[in-house]
Amino acid sequence: MKPNTNKDLTTFEEYLGEEYVPVGSLKRIEFEIRAKAFVIGETIKEERRLAKMTQQQLADKTGTKKSFISRIENGHSDIQLSTLYRLVEIGLGSSTMRLSPCP
Image (tube, rainbow, N blue to C red; front, side, top):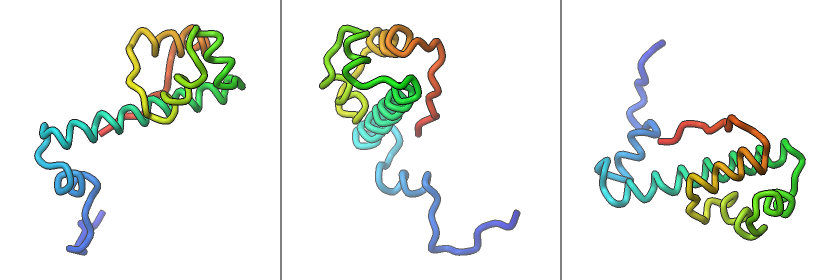
């Protein structure tokens, strides 16, 4: 494969380096937390849809509220591991959750 000769193009990693420098900075850490919350929320949403469940049904099955499920799916809520376990194992009946790698 030929190396990129267009000097105006940047990779995603280069962009992150420019916008959220340096790695380990507060701005970069906050970005990575939001990115991971987004991935978890999207994954739960997709798994719920594959299980043909509504947010209310998932909430009822796991002892949470529909609004909490909505906040998680939209990446607007912190989630404890114990709650994630309840959603995945008990609510969705899955022992594996397909999480994509995050930056």
